[in-house]
Length: 456
Ligand SMILES: [Zn+2]
Image (cartoon, rainbow, N blue to C red; front, top):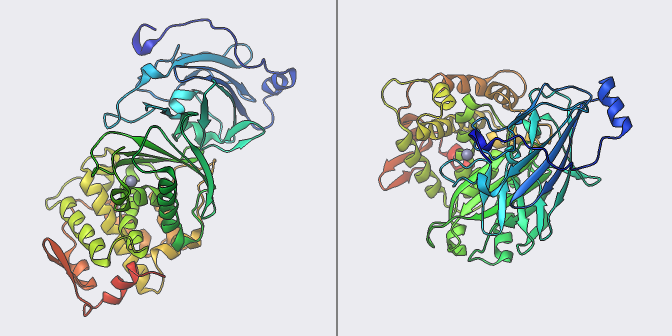
């Protein structure tokens, strides 16, 4: 591999089957729904891929990762006469350390976490009704764990499968891959190395947290969910250090956790509840990151308190401390602008959290609640999801027509500072008394505060 991005043009042995004459005819007729067919041959070191476009004609195939950190045989290829192209990816040498930019290839001791950017070249243009079909052969001793649904030995996705990322696992057969049904979701979980906690206990922990998030809305809103536990260094008290939820074509969560943490530390974790909560509402665009993160951050406290994992007071301590960290006193850029460039991260998360707290109060004053509106919408993560705007999500939470949620959302998106929301907290009966908070039940909205964290 030489040159920028490891680019070399190389002719390789053909892999995958030649398109049949029927497939070829479809390609030439450009009729029916457009399809992309992939044939992959995967080993932990190297992936050989062949992609064919049917029913449409791309000008070129290119990598999903524009930053070009991949060892593709060629990051850009013109389709041949059949509308196909072949490529090769050096997987292990594409590694980047996490925290530096967790993107597309992570190498663990016994598994690789791969995004679509490591598996596929995609056409420069993907028609909106494109169906993606993938056949894969994995080298002996390894398995591909996929968040995309599988039918007739083919993985399937819609166009969003190549527009937004999710995480696939290439897992050694020495690791367990467990499948079970939890709260209406087909969960597959595995790990990339050894952990201090036995698998049965890990499984109980995962299923309980999924059930906590699902409880107020009925089922967990995902047909299939892949969870990959990734040992990532750290001491016994480090616990879950980071989580990454993605849903391009199917939902996945990677948890980076200390291999040395005992169950008692994992029991105290909030990251898992946060990441799973993201899936309760649709994925949103970049400038709406404040809304996505605000929702998940609010829910990580509310849902844990409702499930009895933390007390009501602990939940409010976390919220108050978060609002303090996110505070922006002076006039600054708007929250939406800050989200777009992922500027002040504390502000994005915690001002977003304050927005959802205010929305929940407003809905509860009307006898409803944020979780009730989420449940009424019945959102499900599907293989055909598209990122949505926060406005469309707020309107849906309003019940279809712009109302109080839309109004609060617009006000927060365009706000240029974030003063500590003292008045709102005082009405709820939450007073700062560092290092704790004092909860008073005489405050006007105390019944609303109590109902937020109460078990159903
Ligand atoms: Zn998040």
